[in-house]
Amino acid sequence: MSSKIWFITGTSRGFGREWTAAALERGDKVAATARNTDSLDDLVQKYGDALLPITLDVTDRDADFAAVKQAHDHFGRLDVVVNNAGYGHFGLVEELSESDARNQLETNLFGALWVTQAALPYLREQGSGHIIQVSSIGGISAFPLVGIYHASKWALEGLSQSLAQEVADFGIKVTLVEPGGFSTDWSGDSAKRSEQLAAYDDVRARIMEQRASRNAEPGDPAASAEAILQIVDAEEPPLRVFFGAGPLGIATADYESRLKTWNDWQHVALVAQGSPRQG
Image 1: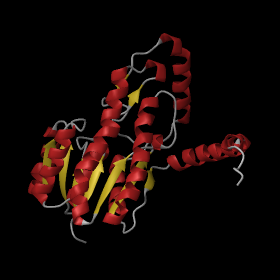
Image 2 (image 1 turned 180 degrees about the vertical axis):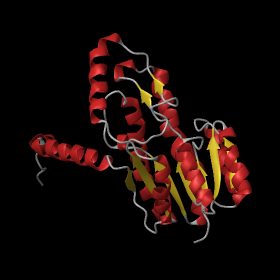
Image 3 (image 1 turned 90 degrees about the vertical axis):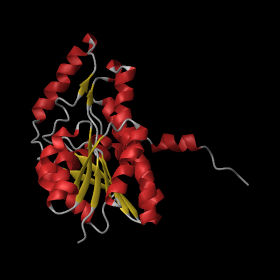
Image 4 (image 1 turned 120 degrees about the vertical axis):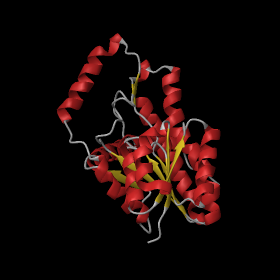
């Protein structure tokens, strides 16, 4: 198998860091972006010219285009583009400020959009490529306290499903990776939080109690590296794939509930359709 050229955002920690290291270890080359690339110094020392660190804030569209061009010019092609940069924002819907909402969307949605747009001309010209969008089980289901995070990931899901159909004729694949809970910094130092409203104190306490009672075992980010390599090496990769043991059960229950509700209310849907036109 010939080596691949990767472009990965958000490589300072978590999935991005693990996937960068795994790609390099097997002989691939990586353009790795981060707001602060100092965290990649050890990988540069170990893998040398196979790693191109690029300082990047994905919310800067011009910088995204420049970074993708730099990577392509440096390595001569791009095979795998991974939009991993993102963070979780914790805040009930009424608690969200305008900046809370805009910042979450700027990073999780628009950052991925800009990088995707920057890469597509190169991938189209090659007639090949694989775009990996890091979504979440929160991209198809939703829970309280992280509504704006869900909004960003649900939007990414719809955008990417459309994209997959638009670029298939150019030999470009698209995969949405939908992790469950993993031992990353998603809810730690990298997360943002809204100013809390006292009116929701009881609601918030109940939410946290329910979360604690579930006590799900988080996935191992290091183990996810083998999974992502299987995805990028697949001849026909999936449009969507869960990472972790938990998401399938959540999705199954959620979709069964949706289908039941839609079926129970289909009589209203038919009322809304109106009577068939005659003649």
